[in-house]
Image (tube, rainbow, N blue to C red; front, side, top):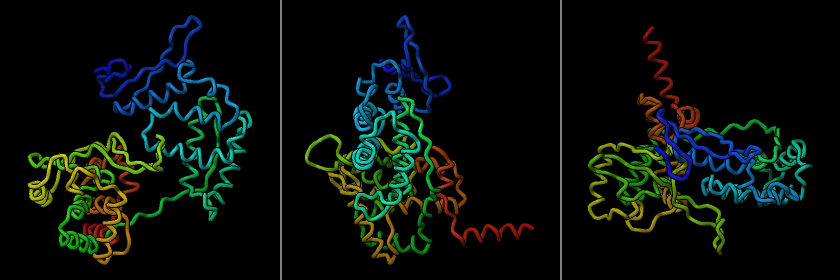
Length: 371
């Protein structure tokens, strides 16, 4: 299967192959590069990225090849990668460049950029890099800046070697069985659409942006399946206008996030009741053609949490709780990973699986009984 005009093909082994001109011989003949990925979307993005770093000169403006300084270079580089990354990634890059990189390194000529210079810059940022001047940047933000600089400077052969402090992700919060029961009871008493959204997330593990984007047509009663194929997120406005931020409704976090999730029977019964008076194009959380954005959903969720007598948590705890309960029930990791929309089971194991202490105790008791 080929995508016309794109030089993208699906191979017999199931992988997608993309071709691009990486250079030209002295006689002008094109020399092609080849990229292989598991999905069309992934290979298309990789192809667009490769085109910006090729030496054909077609994708590179004069200012990118001969920039005055880092600011001029990044200003020319940023539009070139816009089609190869998600809108949210582009907005994040744009913000990091404007707020953090240009004020400190913008006037540095490219030939003077070195690992030592950037290392010193990152060290200063970690100590006192917050825009409000109260503290240093988080290791996560510093890591994002380094990744951006490495990616952007690769086309001109600058290879940065930067060291960061060891960064351990904070241990995620998971609802205990008692807290989970209290939240379910509270939600069932409210009997509103956003309460139903909490149940949907608690028993499927979907992300808050995916929940907010769901319409009633995304649930098939006949198949008993929830179709996840988009997400809503608020991001920085890079398109001009008076608004500082905009709402984007687009593809989910990754190709693996587009998935079908079988729904338990009690949720299907609830769907059947609610769907009787709903339109197919109505958003589930609002019951109308207007969406509920994530921060509004988060606000409503925290109100339900307080009513349930649970210590303050954010919506993402439902996703961690879903994964943990699945593990405790003996569901295999591959299944959990696919339901969560992860591209790798390692992500599920390392970040989303948190067996409760009592469950660990039960497992060890079973081991002792078997002796």
